[in-house]
Length: 477
Image 1 (cartoon, one colour):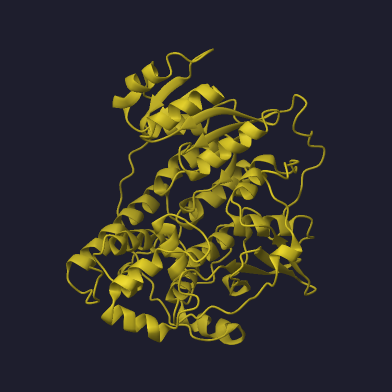
Image 2 (cartoon, rainbow, N blue to C red):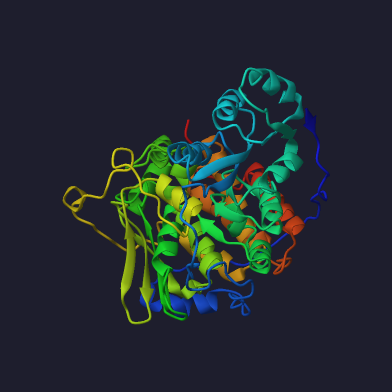
C-alpha cells in the first residue's frame, strides 16, 4: 500500500539577482586580466563554498573487492530516463556487484513495472499518487516480495535516503533533484551525480553539506569523470589547470557571419541545424545546448564546485572527435588525459564502482583502438560565436544564486526556441537580460529555498521578457 512520508518544508522565497555579463573576446593569455575587471569587485570568493574534491582525489585503502558476496546497494532516482536505464543495464550485467534497492520514476509506468519485476527493489516512488493502484495491479504477478510504493516529492526523498543504500544515483532533471540529493547526503549516502542542477544551481548549499557529512560526490558526466580519474593520486597542490573538451556542436564549422545571415533570411535552417548534432543522436535540448556551447559553460561552473579550481584555471578547447573527454595540467606542466569511445555508461559505472574498476565485456564495452581512432584535433572556442562561455564564467565568478539563474534562464530560453517562440540568437539575449535583472539581490550564501525560488524567478523572467516583445529576431516557421 502507498503511504505519504512526512512533508518537507515548502520551498518558498523569491529573490531577484544580477551581475553584468562582460564581453570577453581575448585569447587565454589575456583573458585573465580582462575578466578581473569585468566582474564584481568581490568576485574572488571562489573558495567560499569549498570543493567536493579540492584539487585531488584520495583513494581509500583496504576497500574490499566488489563481488564474492560484497555487493554495493544502489538507490536510483529517474529509473526510466536515459541515465536510469543505463544504470540498470550496468546492474543487470553485474548482479554480483550491484543491487538495486530503491527506484523512483515519473509517469512511465510500463517501463517502471518491468524494472520492478526484473530488479525487485524494496521501495519504489512514482510522481502521482493517483497511479499507485494501477502500478500495483501491473506488478501483481511478480515473484517474491512486492516493494513499498510511495509517491510525490516526499516519496522520492525516502527512496534517496533508504537505510540500506550505499550510493544514490541522481538521474532526474532540474531542481526537482535537489531535495532528494540533500536527503541522501544527510543520510550519509555517496552521490552518483548525473543531475547538473545539483552543483550548478545548488553548489553553494550542496558542497558545504557534502563536506560536512563526509559524503563523496562522484560525477557521472564524461568530462568531469575524466577530470576525476586524472586527479587521483595527485599530491596536494599539484593541480594547475583543468581543460574541458567540447565537440563544438552543430555550428563548429559554420562562420558567425553565415549564422547571422541565416537568422535574417532562413531562421528555419538555424532551428534545424541547432537540433542536429554532427556526431550523435541526442535529445533536442541537450543538442541545442551543445550548439550554443551552453553545455560547456555549465560544465565550467560544475568543475569549479567539484574541484575548487579557480575560474582563471578552467579552460575549454574544441575537440571534434570527442575521444579525449577532458584533461588536467599539473604544476610541473605535465598533462593527464582520459580517453575512450564516447559512451555514457563508463562514467556512470565508475561512479557506482569507485574506487574500484569493474572488468567489462569487450563485446558490450568496445576497447579503444588508436588506429581506428585516427587523428585528434583541437582549436580554441570563438567566444563571439559562443557568448555562452562569457556568460558562464561571469555567472560563476559572481557565485551564489547567479549560477542557478544562468542555468534556469537557459533551460527556459531553449524551450521557447524549440517551441519557435524566439530565434537562435535570442537565447543569449534573454539569458543576459535575466542575469542583468538579478543584480542587486544576489544571494551569496543561499539556502535551498533561495536556490529553488531563483530558479523559478529566472524562468518567469525569460517568459516575461519574450512576451514583452523585445525579441525581434525572426523565428522558424
